[in-house]
Length: 353
Ligand SMILES: Nc1ncnc2c1ncn2[C@@H]1O[C@H](COP(=O)(O)OP(=O)(O)OP(=O)(O)O)[C@@H](O)[C@H]1O
Ligand SMILES: [Mg+2]
Image 1 (cartoon, rainbow, N blue to C red):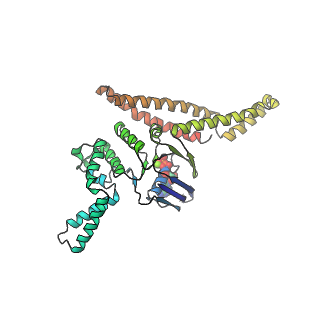
Image 2 (cartoon, protein in one colour):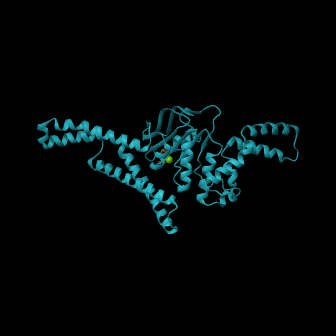
Image 3 (spheres, protein in one colour):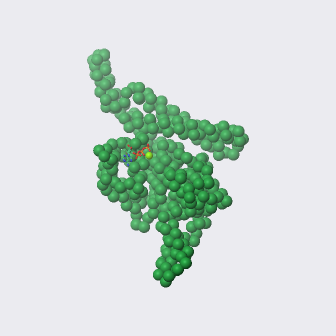
């Protein structure tokens, strides 16, 4: 569980959050969406204590652990794959390191012996003896074969590193998990493992993503960062939110209609119509051009999402030749980029509704 109390975050004069109060409970996956610069990453950095808020507190449930998917692909270059994953469980790693350092001492004292037995107790409580085999199973599940488990991170490919960093975040079943744009560097197979993991995850997940298909699969609660510190809490996934936004837009348009036909004289008066339309536009804060763009984007996003889904199914089907696989794999990142771009614009426009 993550509790955010009276949170303010301000950079210079810019207020990013003001008096945010929220509770994130176990068994739920919360998705965060919002335009670039709305403060999504900052919010996660505050929760993971990488950044101090201007005011307010963040707390976890008693004795709980929080894990973050690292975006830094080079941070663990000098460590082995196995150590990188084990280090994901900070407390366990600290106990292991201190214990090993004491055992390695040439002048092992009585005091060291007492300390070691304390550490051994903690180690056993955390099921430390299973740690390596758990980490190995996690790595293998994410497609990192055993022969690489003791390779240095710097000798792994970029794609493999992403999988290891994911294993590191998931290792030791954290109570709370923070993921900022996790799908950006993931290949389809790893993405599927992550989706399945999150669907079964008993703890609390907060994930920032522009990937609507991914969000729809894993998220059951959406927070829309609208900028200027405004956060909208929506009890559903991305598609449901879009549908709800569309319905709202429709309702508003419906409400605006009677005013339009209610005044017959103004209807024939060119200037009056223009004025009334201007008022209408003012209320909607969206020009006709933008409205058309919004509708068009909605269709394009649906079509691209459908294309992405089909393509992913085809790629996973095992029915394609190597040539077909290579050819079709090229299209997938293009679709993702297009979707990212269109969805960002779609959100900007949706917020004017
Ligand atoms: N340490 C900092 N000092 C000053 N300004 C900052 C700092 N960190 C972030 N900002 C600003 O705060 C705003 C929010 O940044 P943040 O990275 O949280 O946005 P975001 O919603 O994650 O955007 P994106 O979708 O591009 O990842 C941005 O305008 C950014 O420039
Ligand atoms: Mg960000």
